[in-house]
Length: 445
Ligand SMILES: Cc1ncc(COP(=O)(O)O)c(C=O)c1O
Image 1 (cartoon, helix red, strand yellow):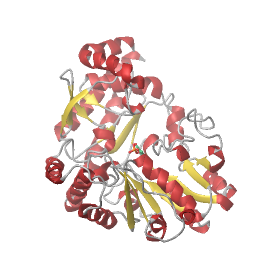
Image 2 (tube, rainbow, N blue to C red):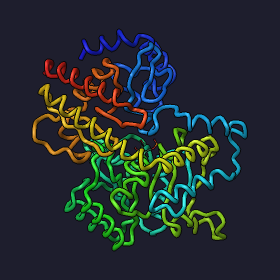
Image 3 (cartoon, rainbow, N blue to C red):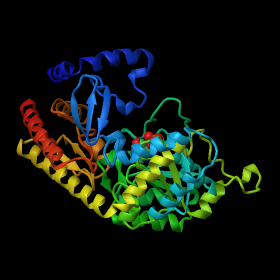
């Protein structure tokens, strides 16, 4: 690894300097833990389409795409234009305006469970509100989440994210958390059912990503989703889909459209804001209406949801509305195209690594993919649990990342997402780079 880091260092001296400076004022030099990777992250200067450029002038094909946000590529004209227009009217008002209604109406039209919408500023906030609302609506306390599932830094769901799942995720979390939030294993029907039944009297809701981000973008099986839907219905608990990544990505109406299962609540983020900070909680009218300030009930009969100085920010609304309009108008071209690109990349990277004799498994759905490096052959990698347990994230995944960077490709978890801006030539380059990297990795085993 030392030699590899030296190659990276030679290409990125200005980034190394900036990182040293950043560490003096920001813990670890970053503001989101995922921004860090060893030996240090490169600093970006600009981005356009499928490409990004760092401060040292290196060009990369980007597969991280602003944390899976930029489905149209970086800085698309259709978004830039509406932001410029919005700036003529104002930056931030803190007062209601018409565009936020149009944005909410379009979400309602596109997302199956969305009868009403509450905007906030991040996916973290959206999942925090979803849990609070589920507890308030059902009058029960227990929330089940997927072991290994990430729902942002929301304290209620900061449990069972990284292995070992039984240990606390962080100092500073209330020890009582484990009493009211519990983990179930993704796609494991019988063990999940056991936990559901054990908690049946106090079950407020089950939250999951139907396409699990920390688990290789593996989709939940139809049987698993059907079981969760019918059990929550039976127990008068809420089914919550966290579609912060998957909505408008795996289908315009998200995984709930793709798998034809309608949850009670859904959390949104990323694409819905067109590239600006965003979160939203959507779902059934009778549930969302509990949060309305219009209700003349006493405060202890209402659900406190809806702070956020910047909630439904005008620039985000303009960008989000333009994004959703674009996707709606071109859904027939965009989604088949993204499927095709994703399929070619997954197959191509897998074949390239197979041919070079590197034990690797490429997983994903639609335009999403990840590459994993199992410790031994034959492991099934279909859940966060299996990926965390059976693959070499610490060493081989980081090695793959740095080697891909030195070939001009920026990956996250060995992959990322495709946008409509990724050309056939980009895809060819990604696969070629994976082959070269595979060859190097095979030589270093
Ligand atoms: C599935 C999922 N839920 C929630 C979040 C939190 O969203 P945010 O980072 O906007 O707070 C993320 C962030 O990556 C996510 O992937």
